[in-house]
Length: 442
Ligand code: NAD
Image 1: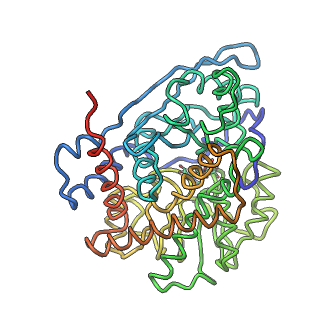
Image 2: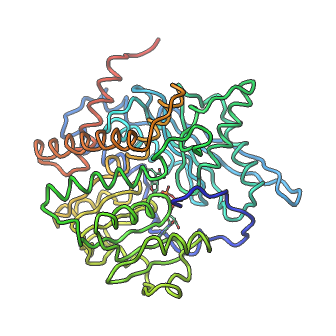
Image 3: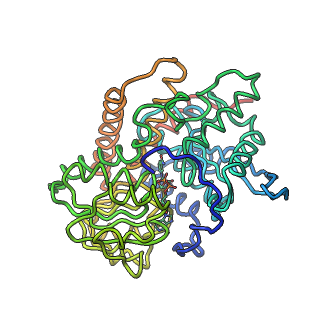
């Protein structure tokens, strides 16, 4: 959601199960390793280097008993994975979703390691998740679950250890509960740097809410420049209309793009002349979902929401979940540019097909790195106790993203490899160097 919203409350019907994901046997972690292996081969990494980096350093699974409003106790499952911390404390979001599993969290933590490295921030890779459909919980239940998760793994977290942030279905309010739980465990000290993506009133950073989409837009500027694509009038389709997707729609419309299609878990909507993102955001603020959007705006509801991915647009932005573009539908993707706001939306098989079609992919570990980029700036501001203006944050983010895009594009041209492999090469070099400089302890 573009604006900070209080946590979801007492809705008993689930809105996360109404649409099947393209998932099945696809393992996000296997896909992540394939991406890594492609870069490792190009770079001719040694067996030792590969062994050191491939597997996560620490994997934690916890049971989370929570008292529900009716007095019963429900036990949830939670995970935190720290993939690599050679370059700094683990950094990465916490996802609340019924499909969360260890394989997914490992993949997401893995991508965080390389995302932080590709944009050059001194942090490692982490990720967490709880197997839960938050739409089924009241606000009180959600708060107790969030606090129990943080308390259960309190020793893992810390400003110099592991710094979580929001991801799918988590928001600034949940970050505030994490921060408060951590602070209360530390004799009530005010310790905002343990988590980012907090509300502004609690040490959040200007520009954090829109940072993921803003970083993507900076990449799209560079890609358009490289490809000779005119952004004014460019047609865009966006899958997922949460934090990343809704800001992506707003920011690209401001650049003169035509947002032809948007979707969320409850459906996909199309308008040839363009959708006004503000209408869609207002609809979601009222109804918590895009369901029924076709009744209030002149848009068509797509019978098959996955067809959004196949529309003849210039820019396709997956901004929902993993494994959306696979060998089954990659051949039908028509966009010239795929800008991955989501983590892991394309499988390696899909990458190969898109590569043959000369689709320009801005890979997730580069494209959506603006979120962690501004999270890092939030962490820095928390530690200084001095806060920057939105303009200052935007300027720093632009510098980070432009430099990273240039590094990746140069590497892609130098090694004649796709942008994803190039992004991994840029990142792996930094992780390997830091690991070797540190050496092995004891
Ligand atoms: P969010 O919870 O705010 O929004 C997720 C959106 O995806 C919702 O609109 C939801 O309805 C929709 N969705 C879920 N399943 C769908 C499906 N099958 N088809 C269509 N839409 C579906 O989450 P977010 O923070 O915007 O994250 C979206 C993606 O961006 C995730 O992959 C996340 O890891 C990635 N990401 C987010 C951030 C961030 O700062 N929030 C940073 C980097 C990457």
